[in-house]
Length: 422
Image 1: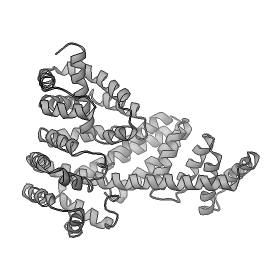
Image 2 (image 1 turned 135 degrees about the vertical axis):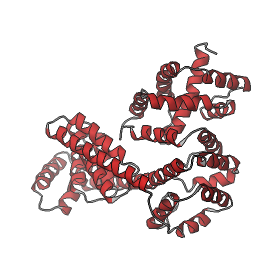
Image 3 (image 1 turned 90 degrees about the vertical axis):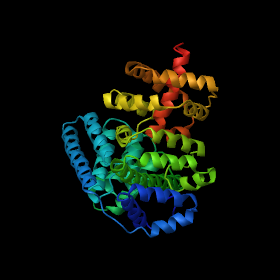
């Protein structure tokens, strides 16, 4: 959101997010009506007027519960780390970090930072150097002089054979922390290797440029994900209190013109690649879901491993689907999909379905048993991982659990036909 609104004070954004938590269904409906005729600048001006704050008791209790759980997971991770069990430690740190993905308090940020740095340490110990670089960069995006992040990223870069990149980080660490003996000793080692391998200042300067760009990109991702997560948490709490809100929001999305939707997506982080039809399809999916369904999807998103490959993320989603409640949510979504929704999803995937095919797919999905869903989900997940090759499309889809599930639903329909079930 900050990317779409670079001139908006972060405090204004936070005030707007807090205001969402206290809105009634009628206020939401009025807001959606007003939004249709608003330009981006109009939206910004409206956000500047947002000064109402306050968090409901239910929201506070949930936030505190998740924070306490994450602190406990972090302590368990520390115990595993001390005993040398780095894989188990990494699993605990990742869970603690993911639990706080929608939290923005100083306490939550502190826990997330500690878990991110500890993940970097685990990845260094287990030889996962690229992931270590990624975790350190995430911390440096918000604290560019963090000693542990600079030192561990330098170590990871060195292990990857990127001596110039390692030298950049360790030099910066030594300038920021000139009395740290460990840093000084490691810098001497890198300077010696640089001379031995004829690494000149031009190469180091180029590495510095790469580091600056890498950190800037990470900073942008952190800003977008933070504001997006805050909005999601507030909206989810609002939907818990107002059961008919999803239907009203869905109707608003369906009736917006293409121009209105293009304008609207500028205010939503991560929606740059969404087409108007994608947004309408997502709106129609929302209409058939409850706040509990969305919460389960949110939990699925949290369970995705940080920094993992797309294949690992899809495997994590498949594992998550072993939860009976998650399977129940997927079954409900599948049974509520209309032929038109299947056709639209097919077009998104590059598959043009006829009216007859879409009707047959929809009818078959409605009659599927839970055990059939689980069986075909495993195959559909594998096909999704292998078949969706465009990197940007993958990243956009993986950020949206509901859309991922909808795509899997379509793949299941394809499997039904391939196996001769319909």
